[in-house]
Length: 361
Ligand code: FES
Ligand SMILES: [Fe+2]
Image 1 (spheres, rainbow, N blue to C red):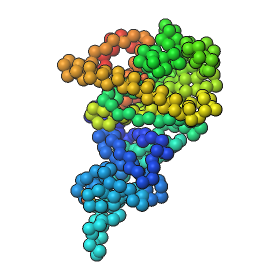
Image 2 (image 1 turned 90 degrees about the horizontal axis):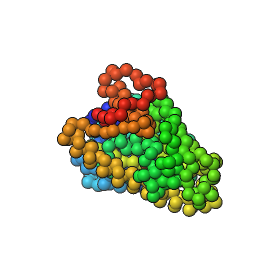
Image 3 (image 1 turned 120 degrees about the vertical axis):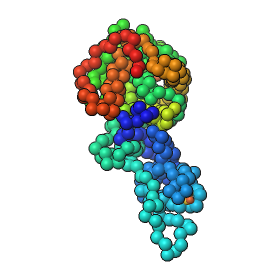
């Protein structure tokens, strides 16, 4: 994690849909090894403070919410949404609350129904903004959160990988998004490198099943738009004429071993007369898709760790069809360099295909 930590701090991280932060409930998260509690303060505003009582270092997440404050489970010291201690049960009536009785407070922002927390140097929070997802305001969605052992870079790369769908997701969305034959031999991925990530599009042949075609339409081409927002949000938008399926994956480094992935699936004009069924269906699909990814990413992480330990590097072989992954890695490495030294700016030109056998390190 240390290697990546500098490039991952001073960033907004997704907590989840704001509606999931309920009054009188504590949500506990860990980002880059920092433990944080999220709750609604007395005014109902979502707040994020350090998950540590400044009295005797007990996790505040073990406590409870009373009148919009977190009450520590050990001696009842009470903290508001700004992290200030506002009540100490054992304090003598004539004594003031010590000025140092406070814990760190994190900037929080709500944007398009999503809640974000800023991790890093607080003074930089105003200079950056979470990626915009305006579709959240209009389309129905389901959000699912998963915690697993994986390499952050590989996990972030996987959603954009166009060829894995027909194999990894054979049983969930393999035909819906067009099978492997649905991609031409040397597809144009229209990869564009922008300051905050990658952007591109490509076409698949519509190889949906008979029933899917009845529903999604018979057009011979399915449009796929992909986008990576540095450092950890990928979006994949699949367009079937007026129907759209949008999959967002937000990946967060939790600690040295684990990442947390929030997958948000949004849809437009799909199962419109049956919103309840749509939600049920999408939730099940999302769990299946992520389950398929997790099994692979977890196993991949184990092999990569072993190889790094034994050989000091990871060996891989790449081909032209890996162009999106390679562009992603090139961008990622440039950012890593940029944040660890005074390296030159990232080239905004279309990245050329890189030589086969491109090593990962
Ligand atoms: S440790 Fe929290 S109140 Fe004492
Ligand atoms: Fe996947």
